[in-house]
Length: 292
Image (cartoon, rainbow, N blue to C red):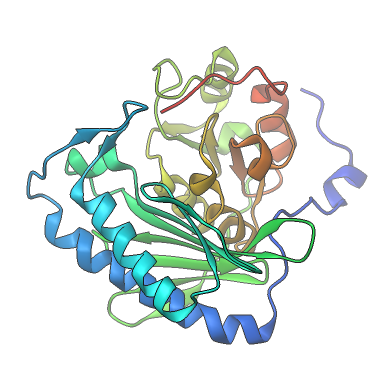
């Protein structure tokens, strides 16, 4: 495989999160913590309790944890910031001005209903500077583990239920043969259709696991994995992940190499491997398989 030139490796990768101001950090990071606590308060008592599962119109599962957590977070936003917009997986869009919150209350509902600890809550804050909304702040929070990443393009921090916190960074991996590759589901399933190109990447990697949904990006941002793949997503799956991964020093694009907020797919890496991964699995726009 031909590797990128030294000049290409030095070129800064495009970032898809927007800058955040110091005033915005002071205002909104504490509120993100409040939203995380609100979601945890609804979700944790329901985990491992055998809650009823319903099917949505697209055949994806939904539970009282999904609906209750989003409703509770929306109430907090509407109370504190009545002029802000909201887009949520369960209750749709409410228009607003300047700022918009993107909510995925239980990312990985299949994990949740299977009593798997890897589900999480995704929260993003976007700002519109006149050219459309772009994320300035994101959170990947894991209720079962009591851990949360909150990130923006200047940095990502890990917060634990015991009150500790620290900065996190991706790890540097320059060879696919040494990489840990993660995906939400195996590429042969109808849930995630990565195709034979995904198999080529997996065969060359050191380790492959389907530790997916938002946990895959948590693992990448904290230096536990090197590549995370999702060929088909929804907007609420992507918006929070972008500032978290970029703040940790990682790189992400869509599967076509473009803006994942527009193409709604993700290839996320620690950075040096990105072009090699994209060369192996990248799919021209319009050729992506549908996922659930």
